[in-house]
Amino acid sequence: MTEEKEYDIEDVEKNSDNRSFMMQALANHAPWVIAYASNKLHADKELMLEAVKQDGQLLYYASKELRDDKEVVGEAIKNKWLILKYASKRLRSDEDIAKIALEINEKSKEFLIKTT
Image (tube, rainbow, N blue to C red; front, side):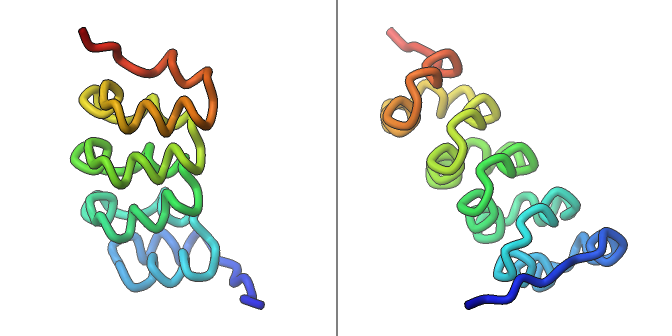
């Protein structure tokens, strides 16, 4: 059984640009630390992919490019469908993303963009 490590906000803020620290926090099941990560780390696909797998809400902090990344968005909405509203317009009109979202919750259709 993995022991959960507690993180102090001061330590998290000091390590906002430390990728190793952030990856270790995710390994320790403390995804909230990602909210304090630097913009550079919010653009790190591997880091953000792991983060949204643990807490889909963290897509909110992802870079614009990652909010347009099908893999990252797909994992985020599997974890928390409502976060679909923060996906790029392109992905909100994507058929595969729509299928994932609608399978999880029909209410997600209000965030999808219909294409004709």
